[in-house]
Image 1 (spheres, rainbow over the protein chains, first blue to last red):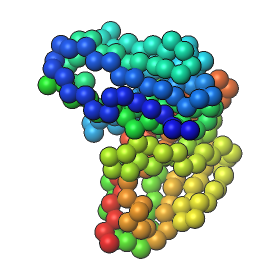
Image 2 (image 1 turned 90 degrees about the vertical axis):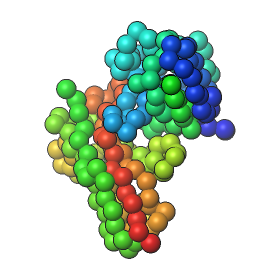
Image 3 (image 1 turned 45 degrees about the horizontal axis):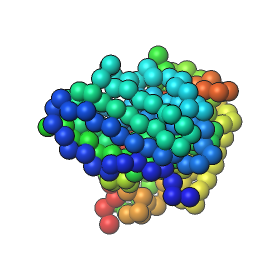
Image 4 (image 1 turned 120 degrees about the vertical axis):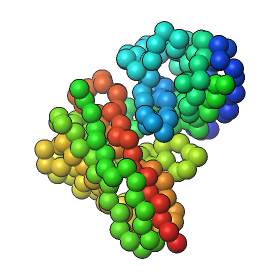
Amino acid sequence: DAGVIQSPRHEVTEMGQEVTLRCKPISGHNSLFWYRQTMMRGLELLIYFNNNVPIDDSGMPEDRFSAKMPNASFSTLKIQPSEPRDSAVYFCASSPYNEQFFGPGTRLTVL
Amino acid sequence: GQQVMQIPQYQHVQEGEDFTTYCNSSTTLSNIQWYKQRPGGHPVFLIQLVKSGEVKKQKRLTFQFGEAKKNSSLHITATQTTDVGTYFCAGRYNAGNNRKLIWGLGTSLAVNP
């Protein structure tokens, strides 16, 4: 198995632009998590899905952030419009039940 | 609210010295997991502790879960340069279908050769 796949690995964009981050979880894992990591706030859970259904989105910063999981093998995290304070590494992780398997992350820079 | 405190934030040791990081929760945990993140990498699962007072070992790493299931520790004996990275604890409150982990801020370990 290739593990959790995220794209793009790096994204540089300008303030106000729309950003879409993509994740393909490990096949058979029924939970998917989106995290944001910064030096200041550490690893923050944004949202997680069970069986493609959003369960807890209390960590989503504001209406500019949205996440979807249209099927068991794909999820997106969208930021519209992006702001410089959104600059961070965004991780997707999938889980069969207990342990979480992280993707390599997307490093987002908003200028 | 549910919060997991982790100390110290940073630790710098000489190769061969021991290292310990501690996690504390104000309320009882269902279980606790430990992850390691190498510089520039992503968190990688190390272990999960479930039972009160549980102790697990992985080579030079020893993991403990407190009797009250509110605290945990990771101890590394005789550190090596390959141990460099950030160690996170992550606690789960309420078993069952809750998959959410509450993460500590991590302890960054630097090892001088």
